[in-house]
Length: 81
Image (cartoon, rainbow, N blue to C red; front, side, top):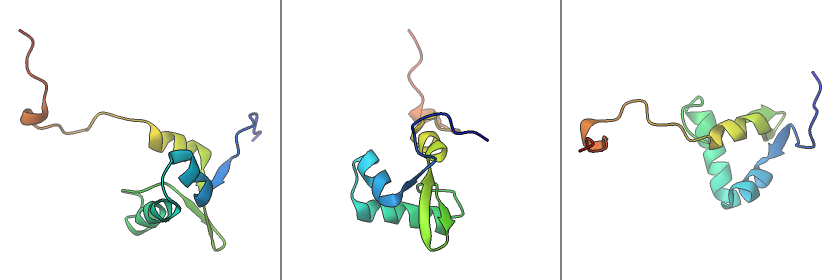
């Protein structure tokens, strides 16, 4: 596999905090949430040795906004007139 861009393959948690504009503590909290919930919530990460890193591709996917899977009727937009 060849890496063809200038983007790093992984980011440190500190770098992710700067990228997202959040505190270092919140970034670590979100990484821990990812680990503790088996990936259901939080910032996606990998543990390499005693260090957590966030793959660039996972960070981009995390930042992608998708519509909720199950919207209730009250959350649905009003019908067109």
